[in-house]
Image (cartoon, rainbow, N blue to C red; front, side, top):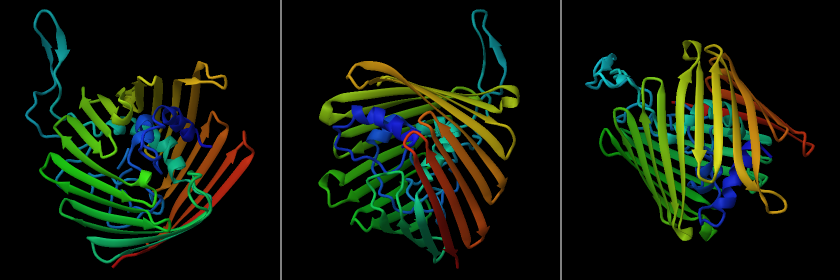
Amino acid sequence: MSDRSEKTSIFGRLLKRSTEPTPAQSSTSPIIDSVRTPSPQIPSVERVQESDEDTFDDSFSPRNLDEEPEEEPLTSNILEENEVLDTPRLDSKKVDDGRFSWVLYPKDIKNPGKYEDLQKDYTDVLLHIHNEFFDGIQLIVNRSFNKHFNVGHQIHLGQTMDPEEPPASYNFQTTYLKSGSLLTGRINTEGTLLARWHQDITKWLQLRVSSQLSALESQSMLDIEFNLKGADWYAQFKQQEKGLSRFTYSQALSRRWAAGVEGVYLQPRDETVMSATIKGEIGPDYKGIFTARIANVPTLELGYTHNLSSYFKIATSLMFAVAADEDGQPGLMGMYNVGYQYRLAPITTVRGTISSSKVVTLMLEEQISDSLAAIFCGQINYSQNQYKFGLGLQLMFNP
């Protein structure tokens, strides 16, 4: 079992009785891993940039096959996550009124992005490989008819990170993208149908509606979400028909520091889960990124990413949580992850991770040509004496 699965299980025990089914993918927030909208393992289109939740491009990705799309690249009106904002702020300068001394924010302060993006720097290295790992053979065929419409097919023989998935499956997806609107549908051999609609209402407000129909009533759902984006803040509100409400807010504190809060209310259990995160760029030339997150579950998660160069970076995370032991007594549990990401070229990426659960994972992604991509992955679980290997190919046909 991956280390990420260990994290999810901690909060899964808290929210186990929630009617929200277990998601197919991880988010960067362990709380939301247990309560977020489920997504069947169906291919999604390629993300222009890698994030809890969420992008679609005009072509499908050989690896991001079951992640929820990000909204920025597909909504041309909303500002990019890290876009420099031309807002009427004062230039950076020191102010002293005789009692206090501080520095005013510079006018080029960046939007911090979504709450889960505060942890994105190290989760992209440590969790991406576990999200995309598969065992066996995977074949993906994508066809773009024009810049607005494309379809994708996926055949998978083998196991994924989700043990509940069947050993063999076929998935089909269609996507329509145009002028701030997105419509996408997915269906698999289990008969699960997922539909999403994203719409820019204004330059600062986006509506997202997702619905899932399944043979199991517990897995059918309807979600409505609003995303609001300001000059130096980002807010989200999500309501699920089964009684889950979620609100997040992130705020830029300076050019290199940002913070955010998250609240999840489970109406069936009348329970509230809160968390707070802070992120900052530190060290020489600000090449290090430190993140700390605390929740009332209770948990404390620390993450650090260091960019050694433009093509090589390393990351680590350490999480402490209070959980019951085999005798049912509460105790402190700790977990860690160490990983790296190395881009040999714009078309080749190597990732590797080692976790405290004695799991070693490696993945090589290679863009062989404009129409052919390959993925090689392997995993060794020393604690359970398990070995898994996967080979994936993607064919892309563009007009």
